[in-house]
Image (cartoon, rainbow, N blue to C red; front, side):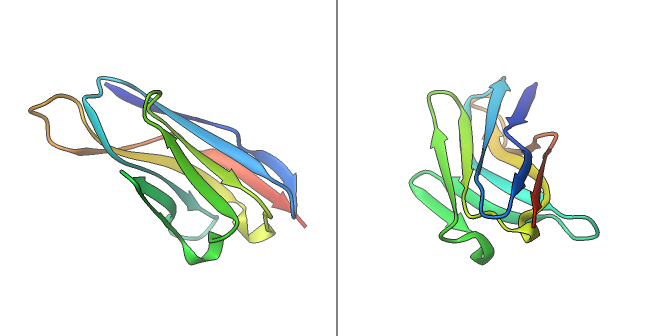
Length: 120
């Protein structure tokens, strides 16, 4: 089994910062990509940032404010969020595409979500 455990969400004022962490554990052979998604009330889940090998991609709405990083030795991905805005308020979900063993297919895994609330 594979688990993704997130931490770091909370309440912050506009202009503030938060750092999210997500650690993958369990039966992991290789991780392809890791990333962060978010879902605001009444809206669809959207990608925030992803990292795959040496490449990173960001949603236009967070470019220049958010930074994704990954520690492969710990199977952990981080999201540093600066200059937060009320519209960043959402549940943030960690995502990983990984294989459990050398003969396994790649599967998509999700964390349980962590609430980020930005007050104006």
